[in-house]
Image (cartoon, rainbow, N blue to C red; front, side, top):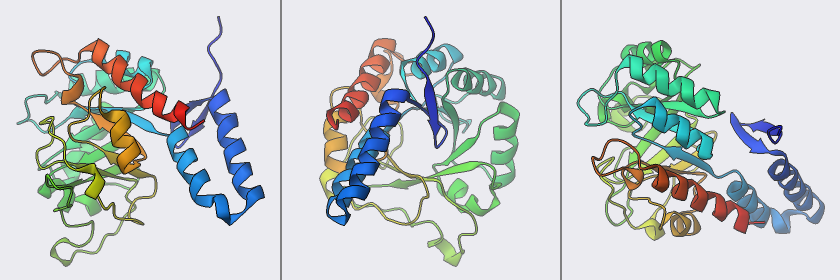
Length: 266
């Protein structure tokens, strides 16, 4: 059996049926005018809801997550993390993601721009996620041909406590930021925050924002309904007993739940 045809939208595979529905939603908005703009925009965002499985530590888990429909496969490049990967493993994970139409994301914490660039290029990673103060401070040194996910952290009440890009130390932002990611105070902890209070900064990221922090197969639908992100990110919520390898049944359930949110928009 031939695979279903797909279309590339912002680097992510979209099925023909989903692509056609997306076109219809956009056409409906243009025909019925501005009155329906907000409704159509919300529907489009749901239809294009992306899924990131992060903290992947081996190529087998990357293959499985991407086959299930994860658009982004994240791995920790910070050597002090318990889920850190070597350059060799990172390359294998990136290759597995690319094989199934997903994109690899390298997560950095205290690395400088030169290190971020070198390690991404060595492993074939197209997206750098800047998760710590030092890596965020290096955003202007990340080459323009690498996409950037800029991480903001929120406290338990959903109040963002991280300075916005370009606001820290009076350093002017000199490059495009593709994505914002909003996480809890401790990344990878599996702890969530109050999504209902979240005020997402607008106009800072060209492709949208990801919601992270305490997501799992049972709460991702509610998280999307409450916060309306462009993408959802999971790590601890789909781990196995050792906290390192992914539990494939949980990965499948998470991706399926996120897809069901999009289907509900139809």
